[in-house]
Length: 426
Image (cartoon, rainbow, N blue to C red; front, side, top):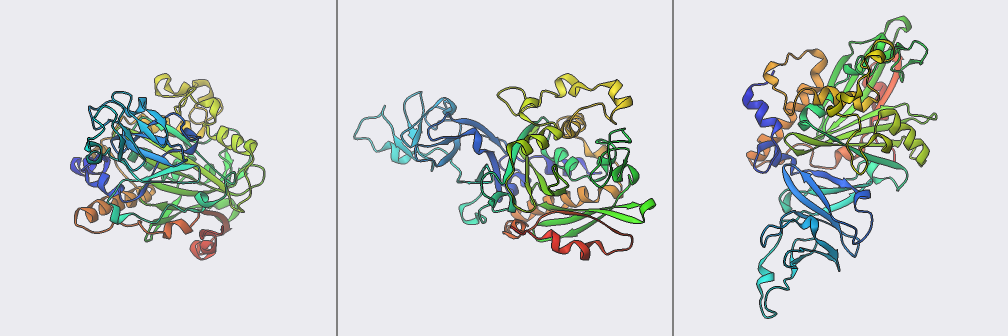
């Protein structure tokens, strides 16, 4: 368990908070490219780390990310006119470029130089992997631009979506890096669904071995961790080797559909202390193109395809307001939860903890090693920034790893067997 003071420290990410200041040293997903698809398209509200921002793609195609409130009298720039390479406040016409500089102040006399003295807070952005990334830290500490394997593939060879979650980022992230929960939360009750590594069914490896052994290996970008399930009747081990990349990204291997092995992952980005965005990315291990049909099949399996969203939003139709449409008869006969969609099941338990869970009440076991280690890394990063050091994982080493899974004979050294597969190939 955590003390109340430590729980406060690790869950708060707004400006000036220790973990919030540490997170500002990394590239943060701000929004999807699809949200601002074309030059001079409508601005979009963006919430990150407790800050209210507005994103816009200017006439030249560059993306600006600025504070929502105009520095004149505080009007929202969300209502602004995105035109002629800048965003113009509709209250008095003040116009700002992507760097935040005021380039026009039409309600002041022509001879005035006041505009040269005014800026709106702005953050640099880059686009990669269908995501607009923002850097919110000191300019002289800017890390290498994001170039994860999935993010450097050509358009159409990787995919990224996002979902809105109504809880603190940490309990969402901890759900994602928890290996043993898939033996329960995501299990189906069908004995005919399939068996082996990829199945959530009653005869799959997750059902056969519900108490995986966890091993965590610290790295300079975070850690590699393995979930080792002993399949007694086959005298084999099913090993999934994940990557946790600071401050909030997980990579995992996945058999995929249509015979394509793939790598999937999540990034859990704080909007504020009680809400977060979950970015969900995927790509094929061989780097091949992903057809829209394949993408839709996978997104639908996880319960986050467009038809699962409230129209015009990234919020699931199955949400806490309707108890995620839990079906108690299905819970008895079809699945462990009676809730449709793998990610919907995750959200049900994560949001069900409340906006910020009180970790003074928890009791962690050996299955929670990855969670314990992630907390230590985040707290260490916060301390490093407070004491003037660079936090762990701000280099580029995390850009060159991937996840893997393998079934191997009992007694095999899992790391030696999988080491080559944990290196990016594309």
